[in-house]
Amino acid sequence: MTHQQTPSGPTAGPRRRGLKALALSATLALALSSCSAFDRGGDEAEAAPEDQQEFTIGVVGANESHREVERIAEEELGYEIELVEFTEYTQPNPALTSGDIDANWFQHIAYLADYNVSSGEDLQPIGATAAVPLTLYSNEYDDVSEFTKGDTIAIPNDAVNQGRAINVLVQAGLLELSEETRQPEPRHIDEEASTVTVQPVAAQQTVNALESVQGSIINNNFAQDAELDPEGDGIFSDDPTDASAFPYINAFVTRAEDSENEALREIAAVYHDERVLEIDAELSAETSVPASDVTAEQLQESLVDYEDSLRNAGAETGDDEAGEAEEADEDA
Image 1 (tube, rainbow, N blue to C red):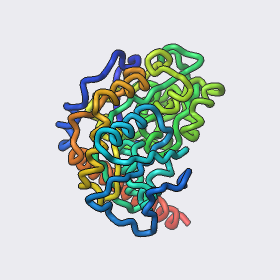
Image 2: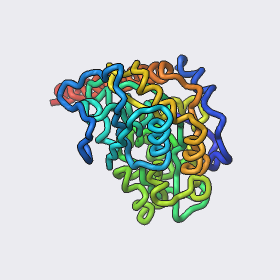
Image 3: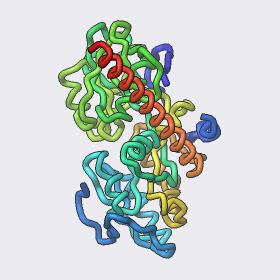
Image 4: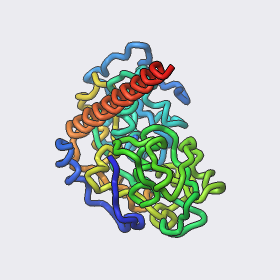
């Protein structure tokens, strides 16, 4: 989906009102670093027993909000939680699929959909956390209007965050697309009509890229690590309260056979304890929007919708490539 909006600055002020509007719109329309003491690993992971009390949860870059959920789940609900920390986004889903961990908490629905479609797996969200804006930073400019023709902006190179980053730049008025698509790639950019060019880099390198390009779109956790403030340092971000942001709600995720597990759902719900929300708000410089009114079922409906859109886009790309090959054969 393309977004043609008047350029504006980052959304300002605290956004602690949740995503009720997005929840209502959903029906319409984010290698293991250590071995777990509780692992049930194997090629064919089994569903967690109903009476299981010990769980491993995979995260990327554990922070205070992860540890507060762990503390509350252990001290007040009686579970035993082990946070398993990964260094890259590509690691927690395969670990979950294989049964090395019981759940993960690092991704939004769009990322999960891309993983399921590309891998043929069926991981499922069981509890929403929050949506966080994706922000453009620059060491050279203070406003998007200062970018000039030929400037370069670094964007994450994984398919989902790359597509979202391109849409952020479309919303900022810096890029135009040659065709509408839900998950745009650099090939969809109309370079002649656009002000900037994009340079895809590994997501963890987007901070370092600020030293060599005019701007960089940086995921919130990497911005936190670099002590960048989305409100004070960022010059533009998408709006996590907009209905189009529903696929970017982050979630706790399990294997399909554990998607109804009451214990895992109870642990996921701890995120919406006010003590956790206060920590997350501070970590995100008050930019995160808790999705407290969003149900697991609404997340799962959004996941199916996004997966279908990716499959349809893939089928269209395949048809186009087949047509081009046929034309080449005829020319030959």
